[in-house]
Length: 319
Image (cartoon, rainbow, N blue to C red; front, side):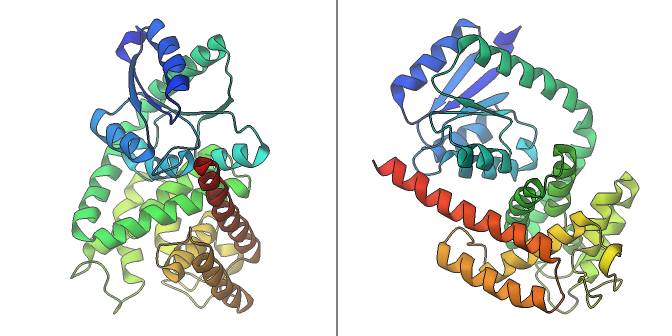
């Protein structure tokens, strides 16, 4: 029975929200409504909806920012998300895919198409439920990291968001992107085994060894490679193993450079000036042979596109 499913609707246009709500309630869905991004984020964490429908120009957090926040939370990684908006131009569609939107739909919408999409995404989520035991383990590890080293946890979330965007820009399939994001979320999990708050600099790569040992029993080779090797350099000057060139898989290269970029920007890549400064510093390191030039170029495109689009969305919201 669809009445067992709860849909969270986040829209800044009350009349539009009322139409969508009516369609869903007639199909016996329970509907929760939020008028801005932060409120939607709070409701999502409190109510655990089965599906989210959101617009682009939400106050406080726009639709792209809200989706990125949710996708960086292990509890929300499988939440089906529909972006329903009149902004139907390619840049909006591309950005929606990059931040993990499950389905992009243009407004005005067809009632049958919306309901079919909702049911399809809910059915798909049931199939994904078989992954819950591993996801619960990941969730427990990240809760421990969040309480032990909150700055490291926040850093890991940002790196995961950026790595997912870069992976999609490089045309990885969605299964590969999900494994990449998971590796990015867990890349510093070995810091649970360090003394202090996990930010110790005395041994910059030992936590990678600890993390790989923690996760090796799950038989996820990409995940373990990312965790163990995210401090390796393309020219072999990194650690803990001094790997270089083709010995570093693409997911490792992506997370390594995203990790470095977040350190360079101090966690504020959305600001144009800070983003450009970080990209300039990163270019020097790319030229020195530390990072993959192709991955660096895609990261640059993702960062600048995100900054421009955030400004455009903010400007549209002020109209």
